[in-house]
Length: 388
Ligand code: T4K
Image 1: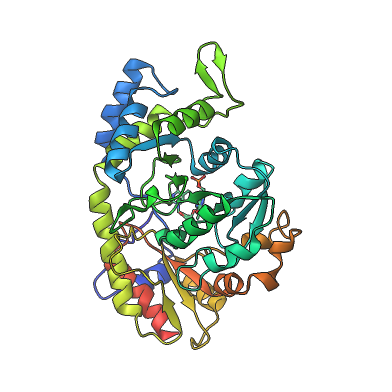
Image 2: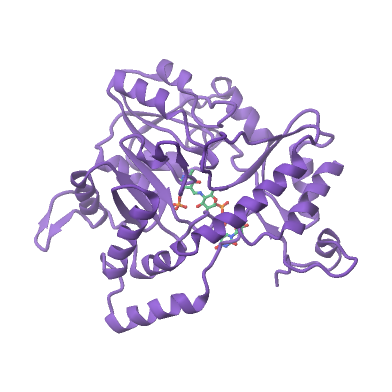
């Protein structure tokens, strides 16, 4: 039983975790709307017996989500990974794809599932996303596309990336798994590139248990993606592509409709958590915080810190120290994707080509970050970090 919301008189949360062996505080805890609100949707599903294949909740959620995100065309998916696999299919991507080693493995697994060759380039030390300056030198005659990731919801340098894509005639597919609701002065950052792919996994700022979406520029592309996510069916007797089953079911979609109404509240709570972390960790020697651009409407997807040389403990020492206290921070993203066996044979995966990504992966620690995280727990975590 989790008791992170409770502080007993004279007993701090950090002592509670240690002495009473309560449930640990994980890096993520899904935000959930009141159960009653979802139950009425379940009743509607029970009555209609429409469980999947783009039923009424699917259509409603697709519409309401597009409006909420400020995008015109969006196709829902059963999860983000199948969304990525399908996005690459939709654009008929072939050959080599330039991407980042500093991400969750799903980013590049989607390439391997399409028979594509990942070409890793190093990251920018500030955004932790692909460094556009490194992209050009990785282009070969086989390069067709770029697959950047908006790491932790901080936008990539999309202008520089698009400039290169335009010069060399490359497609850009953004892995926007972390970028739900992020807006800059021009609007949703999902408008960039040829396609963007969201994840609504349980650990994301907005979730549908599992789920995802592809954001696309026009109705024609959406039509093709809709065919692809439903086995390629254009109608009952016509199959136009070797599609997959990527559909979001009615339970996920109904949940999405309900959850969307609460996102504003959850976002505000995450903002309070993030600001308290920032107040307490700014100036702690050897702890570096994520650089969030000033005018960005961020989503507080993660709270990564870098444990630098000036800190008295190594990153792993701090990770285990917090763990002993019941705080389960996570090392997202360590090891690098390029270090896993199915990738390390690629020339671009050699660590000598990826020094910044390697360094960040050895220093990063993502602290618990979710809407229900009590501020006094944030304060306890920061005390533990500050004391070294
Ligand atoms: N691209 C990027 C850049 C991504 O980060 C991801 C997913 C994808 C693509 C693929 O999208 P999806 O196909 O997943 O839609 C988690 C998530 O499973 C994964 O979705 C996410 N990225 C990745 C960064 O994190 P794990 O293996 O770390 O998850 P897990 O099960 O250890 O969960 C972390 C903590 O969250 C747990 O310690 C407890 C808490 N938790 C988790 C779940 C699943 C809950 O409280 N409730 C839950 O239901 O990968």
